[in-house]
Length: 87
Image (cartoon, rainbow, N blue to C red; front, top):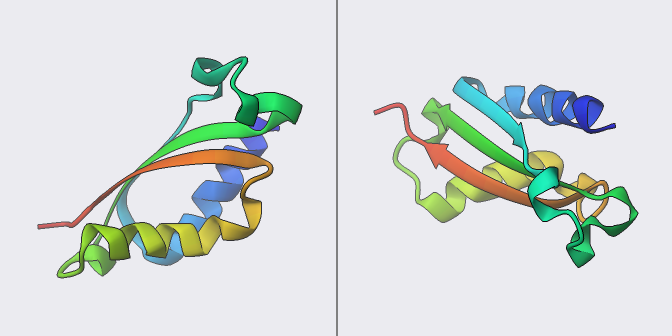
């Protein structure tokens, strides 16, 4: 499921036209964590996009969350985001 989930995240974030996009499954680092119960996953997203140029970090994160909000809190329990400008 996590490979399929990573692919789904990747697909959805294409709307942000990323020049860089890495999706890292960190679920294994959270084994035993309450949020991981029932199979919920933890991911780290590193993304750069021209759409982030000139906007705050919070606004960048909102753009990412807007693409995956329906997947939280299950099957994604946690999403760490590093959203960079292209500058």
